[in-house]
Length: 321
Image (cartoon, rainbow, N blue to C red):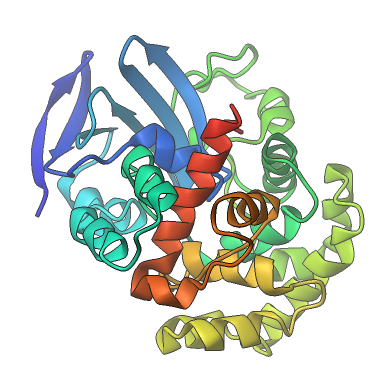
């Protein structure tokens, strides 16, 4: 169980959450599982991010592993949506131990040590599904750019709604309290906006076009239509909590294959046995597992093992994004 302590950090109200093992904020937010987080500050060992969780801006920093600092949050947030999203209550030491008890692979043991600070976030199913459709044949910087553009096209400016006086990214042009407030720089950025609902996309699909989604446009609109109609029922998928059900249901959507479905299963539906395989994973499997890795042998936390491998192979190649 984690501990919470309210107080002032850097002159701002904050809650420091400790007792999180070797939780690494940077590794968790930069491992390719989410696309809304942006680095705000890096000074020595300290790093701070801004991300959007549902309809909330979350400011979170870290100076040392196992401790997260949430600015502008209260204890109900920590025990509620923040704790859920950041998986604060999960015992990842036990998860890592379970995985390693099932394999004698030196590579996987090394990967688990290198990436042990990663936590699987619990993201909104619709946002994750939509985002991983965008991720097809795409790199992380461009995925983030498209998602920000789409959010700005449909969403609400949460900085304005929250009464934040100046741009959190220190960009020029935004200053709340002025009349009228010029939000054009915000829409060019898109970071602080809510994510569009399936209904909004289905009603005004043309708003997707300015983000240049390319061939993914027809997949995104099909996803919106099927989720809105209930043909693909995200709540029922979540309640089933079964990887095979998640895969079969999500693949009813045009353009959603096993990779997109398995990523959504792992990062949104908490199917921790999901095992997405992309080009990085294929490289690791070919080079370090003789071209064959039976993910089922890794047990119920195979998806966490996948993140260890994915992070480590990219780290060895000098990749971050």
